[in-house]
Length: 83
Image (cartoon, rainbow, N blue to C red; front, side, top):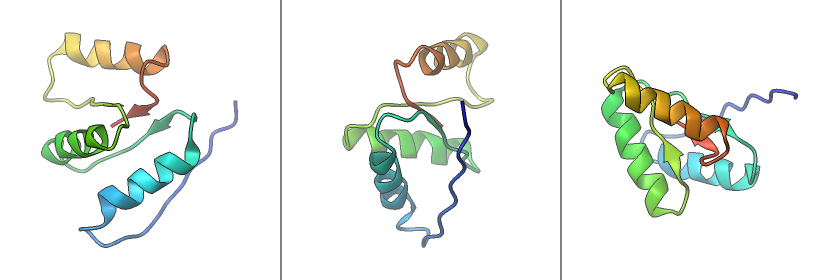
């Protein structure tokens, strides 16, 4: 399929809300979101979860089996968002 890339600018404080708005607009499209820090990734996943968006976390600090599980969930459509 075709790959779409989106880039939005926002203030640091507004980034989670702006991302949530974009993901809501995309609807059922699968998305990969890149974050700068592991802690930021975890916080963002918690924020999105409270908004009803299930996001799978993937970073180097995770055990290999958790990383593999995250990729399986993303690939099989269990989660549309990979952080």
